[in-house]
Image (tube, rainbow, N blue to C red; front, side, top):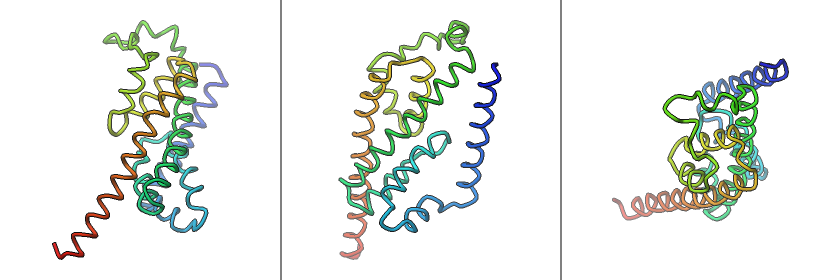
Length: 187
């Protein structure tokens, strides 16, 4: 491993550990930050998405919070922008991993034929990102590692992030409204 790659890898691990520590230490960290940010909360929310990108934590709770707080449309817009930024961070991590591990040279040695995955395929990029939980993170890192052209990566990411943001923001708002209605009618 080149010295530069080792330094970036070490810094990435330190950053990753610090973010995880902060999130574990403060269970209401995300909502607390947003509520304390006042009028700047939408901007802070957008910034939180890429900060969480290198962690195993999902950004779905942020999307739910902004969807309920700012309404489904504005919540979806905030989530869309934040998730695009997070996806770019994950893609960058993938490119660095690819360089650090000399992926192109070692791709044929990966077991179970995983080196032959059609990561450059539009269908793979879109469908893979739709896998709940970590699909988006995994596909983003793989896209960077496999050197998917950035234009293809961005537009496929935009399609799935737009749909996911709309579904989560509107879904969360709808569920909260249904709960409020049921309480109103005593159910």
